[in-house]
Length: 92
Image 1 (cartoon, one colour):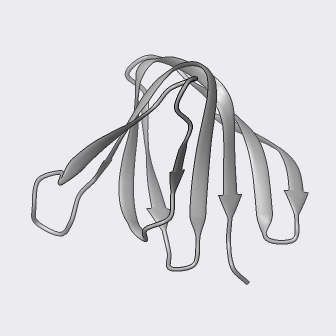
Image 2 (cartoon, rainbow, N blue to C red; image 1 turned 90 degrees about the vertical axis):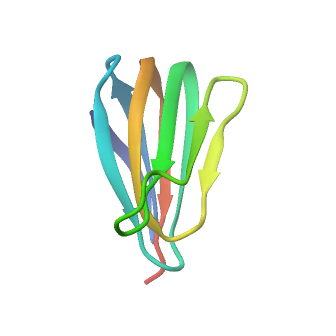
């Protein structure tokens, strides 16, 4: 679940709340990026290319925020209930 609370030109900042096991799909276009900064919990981010299994697995934790800059389709799963911030920059 996401609650957007700040917007400026091409940037958006929102609160991120995900229960354990909850997932969402994030599609990044060229010239876009997304950042996950967690206060609590753990997110697992995987990227799947057409017809292939997930090529790698990334984790965002309170000690290790994550910024994704490569375009593609990502699946975000809450390994543990997560609370934090999600920021998106889109080119216009």
